[in-house]
Structure formats: structure tokens, C-alpha cells
Image (cartoon, rainbow, N blue to C red; front, side, top):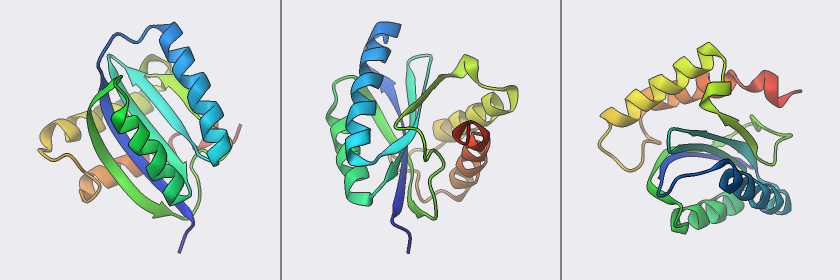
Length: 148
């Protein structure tokens, strides 16, 4: 059994996220994540967050509970929560990208995920096989960045 737990969610920003606000959020997240041995990725596009959190299960769930209570987030939707053999973002306390920085294949993967999320009428998609397949493919496209 793996000691690494991965939780992936999407949410909508309640307010406009300027570069200054994003920088502040990232600075705090990176500091807190380093303390808790949490790694991951945060994507922000068009008022929506897509975040991957990885680490010890209790730590990941604690960080996620804080995010759910954070007034900057609304419509929080869990896309995946599971144990994994290794981290996809082992060297990133919190990698950050905007969607326009993604390669074309990564943008397509993100759009495919967005379409799946829009079709689902649940607040937790972690049991959806089609979502899981798309997430795994999307995360694998970042392995080259995580190893740099």
C-alpha cells in the first residue's frame, strides 16, 4: 500500500484573481506545503482552479479541508482521490501554470477534462472511470516538467 495520496479538484474563483493575488496565494501555499511535505500543481484559467495535491493522506486531506473553507473558492469538485505509487510532482511544493502556458496536447487534455466535469452531475468524480483515465493522461504529460 502506498503512502502517497493524491487529491485533484477543480473550483471556481469567487473574485478576480490578479497576478498579485495569485503570487500571494502561491507564496503561502508553497511555504505551507513544504512544511507538510505536500507537492503538486496548480493551474489557473478563466476564473477556475485545477489543483493536484500529493503527500501523506492526513496532510493532503487537511490542506484540502482548508481550501474548501477558503472564501476564494466556490463550487469545489473533487475529480480524483486515491493512493498512488509515486508523486507526479515530487520536486514541486506547488508548481503553477496558466492554461495559455500549456503545450497544445496539454490544453486539449484540460479541455477534455472540462467537458467531462461539465457533463457530470456529482460533487465527487473520483469514482468515474472516464475522468480517471483523462486525469492520468493529463498528469503524465507533465512528467517531463516535474523532472527538470
